Image 1 (cartoon, rainbow, N blue to C red):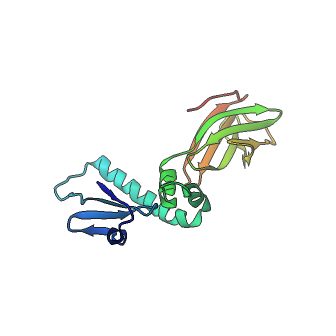
Image 2: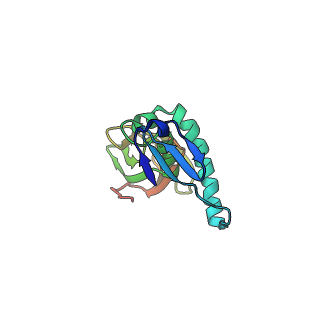
Image 3: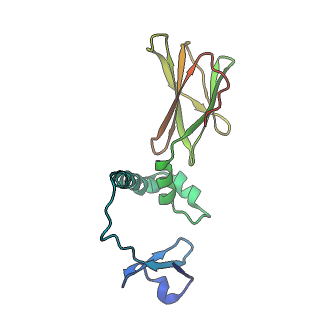
Length: 181
């Protein structure tokens, strides 16, 4: 793969010509590479499944890159585009690091490669029925806070990102400082 910088002839090229692929980069340079040949390739079921997931991620990223300003903001001063960051967000779920209960409040630490959009707390009774459900309020850093109105036997913590990926963890009460990876 060759990298061409600011050559006026190459600067206007994009796409494929004569078995070569020309790709414009965000910094103004042009990457030149040989066109791939997939004519005799047979894809496995796993590869086809991944290709379908990628099509779904690409559809999300095309729209989200235009409608979610956080992707454009994160792309500034990098070689990545808002589309690249949105695509990455689609493939990466949030992580719940810990949850704890203090002073009648539930605190949840959750992170994501882009941002955690919301944290939902669900309280269940002994039979598994929902007693209470609500969204946490963003605190400092990766911390979220929720003030329960009732008590339950089990607490379910859900962390959601912009791409609607969700990570769920069940905690038995009383909540203890629990590290999740």
